[in-house]
Length: 449
Image (spheres, rainbow, N blue to C red):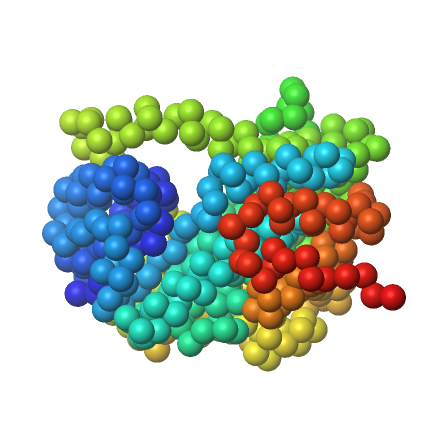
């Protein structure tokens, strides 16, 4: 039976979903599940939940909880990573509050934008340290990375280490389910082909029995049901990405609140009418975190002390499917984030792309796509440059590439001038302090003469 290590297992709800997925397969029901976290209190809750999940499913795994990373990784066959470096406080709060001083507003700030850049600078070094431990303790491990910023993290891991890593997200299958609901077609009857970069992949095909379903999506758009009708700015709508579909002709995988900060068109400090028109929830991730923290003790009590059986429902995450396919040879197609080695011709070679992958006993095997529609590839390249420079900053230790990444970021550049961008980067790096590696904290970069 495989040893499956959960890194950041204190993310109890997400870990619960993945454990339920894994243990629901009879072939994996006696696996060794190792829960690792640096927070003993959250780890204890996740351990209790793991036993409850196993009990509900009638599974008999070996469950080990530890704060010792060496013990957790030694001999692991699979490592599922779900960490958040610097947490909500101070990390996320800094990423939102300091840009606000400059008039730069964000929604999620975990993938691109100035918040995504800073999150990458904090996270990549920690992931690299873990991967180097894996090279020593479990060199054959398959590393399933769920940590954002997905493209930056996966790119750095695959470029700088020998560990087999695939980045996993739920935006492709999740959006397919939402679109199916919008147009009234059962998702299990839909066949789609999607490709691009994480959070900016597009459905190249969306069909049922050979019928192109894009006309139905256009009809839904024209029906007006995508319009934002919330009160205040906290109710989410899909207005942004339906507007993008109207302009580009293809539907994007990530949510409207995410996508609004990957482009320069929707969040503008001098255009509150745009914010209102598209229902863009500024500071949305802050709201979600506060809500989650407020409900944690209640959730913890419910998870730990309830005598009711813990309901287990299969999620749409790919992690368990990959493990099951590799263990049993059952062929499946999932969407994974991998390096672009001749997979998408009009995106930079070596960047991180999201494409369909065959999984069986041979592991995760990406599918060649060829050429994307040129306007979609061009849009993706505006994000890829930011990802590349952030990865390069960490791997080279050159602080100047942080400024360059921020200068090229579509949303940041649309709102701030060059002097503001440089000052913002300086202030953010200082505020994050020791969460940023030393070479990047040193002000060794000067403006060229």
